[in-house]
Image (cartoon, rainbow, N blue to C red):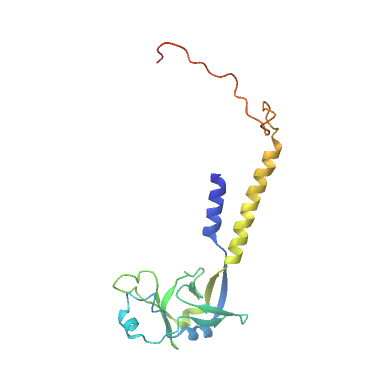
Length: 188
């Protein structure tokens, strides 16, 4: 039972995501992005003034498929000199002709905002956008559960039914041998 619970926890934590390559020119669509709900503690004044903002932006991957970008979307800037880029969630993004500037979501819940990530666009090859897939995650979790349940049924079919049951109680009773007797007198 613990094995089943551990496998389910691993499947849920691993969750299925898909990473898409976003061409460098598409980063300009993120310019001016700001999620006021995520930045509530950082920019309380803008929320109180009720300034209009777009909480989602649409970017296209290298195949032309549209993806929604929000403060919950992990984004990584792939640099030519770097193998693995670190995925981060941003509450504010600014892109101009020379640089990408993003304020990460982590560390921005306190009174002071997190330090902005500033990267010259000459160093950026492309961006990577990661999307969570609930359907794939549920399919993976369901498959793992079915395999575990199926293996338990298969193993239980290998055992012989126990003997010693009465006719009115089908299914068998495990025979533990003679009943222990209580002996009179003090025992330590």
